[in-house]
Amino acid sequence: MPAEPANRLPIQPAAPTLDGTVWALLIGLSLLWGASFVFIKVAAVDIPIFTLVLARVGLAALALHAVIVMTGRAYPAGRAIYGRYALMGLLNNAIPFILIVYATPRIGAGAASILNAMTPIFTLIVAHILTADEKITAGKAGGIALGFAGVVVMIGPKSLGGLSGEALAVLAMLGATLAYGFSGVVAGAASGTSTRSSPPPASSPLQR
Image (cartoon, rainbow, N blue to C red):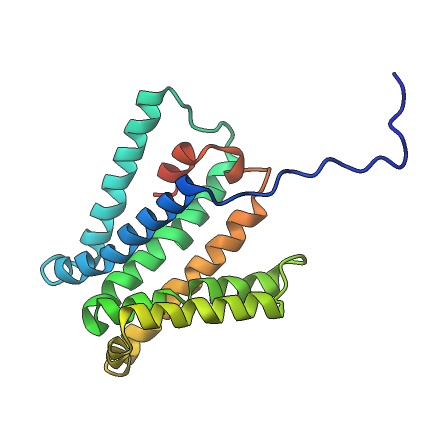
């Protein structure tokens, strides 16, 4: 078999594109994620924190498991991968959900949404510290700053008033966004080896 030419360049994967379907999915996800703060504020009045979080992740896990069964998919084999899923479940679900449910009724859904927009900022900082190839650049920092400013404008600067009333609740929301930041880095470290080797329908219920 002839050898590969020494000067041959490796094939680069195609760059992702944002077509109409992707934009529709992103908008739908934004609406669902944003509305969750309103529902949390209402539900947390009568439902204990841990009960509400358990119901949220439990129902989601059951629904996703049903999707796996109905579509004939299978869970990944091997024990090692489940330790990473457990860590992802803590960082991406259990810890932030508990902190968000605690904080939202105390500072308001609007203020909680604004603080939640800190997630990409914390992700950038965590990745800068813990990875070798995800360093902060002027472009990344500027883009995140503009995005956060846009969230404040859309939700309303008046919502910031809730940030001064409950210092502990504000810290809880920041802790939730920090957990999301760590989960993003952990997911990135799993590229090609564990969690990303499983299709999303199989990965999602394992994190709950």
